[in-house]
Amino acid sequence: MSTTEVVPTLTGQEIVDLTKKHTLFEWSAQSKVDPIPVARAKGIYFWTPEGKRFIDFNSQLMSVNIGHGDERVIRAIQEQAATLAYANPFMATEPRARLGAKLAEITPGDIDTFFFTNGGAEANENAI
Image (cartoon, rainbow, N blue to C red; front, side):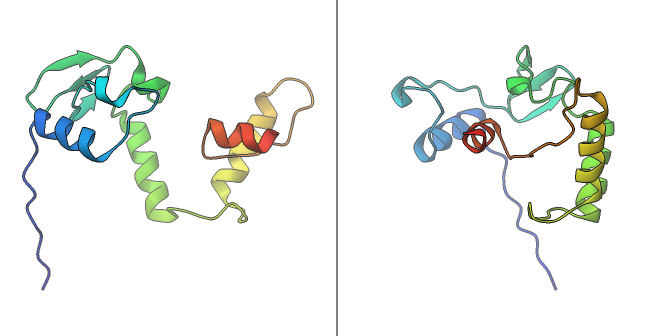
């Protein structure tokens, strides 16, 4: 038998208070941080737990420039997670092979080999 614990939804203020107490915010004087609590997002909007809607002019640091909750992206993530959620960097996978080939096809000049990393800082460190 399995049981599911029902976790109550936090208010926006509870989210902010717990986040400020237990996490650090990047590039900020921590005492001056005044974050917006985000509960959900769709398209160009995001909402607080209380329902206040914002236009996401920054696309969450340009990470969702096609909009929040795009069904094509959701399906692709679900399909990949169901097939293979993670493979270490020493493995060859079909998505890695296809992405490398597509990048070689569309990149100008004779650039045809790519090194994938988890983020910008890691990419810079590896380039050095």
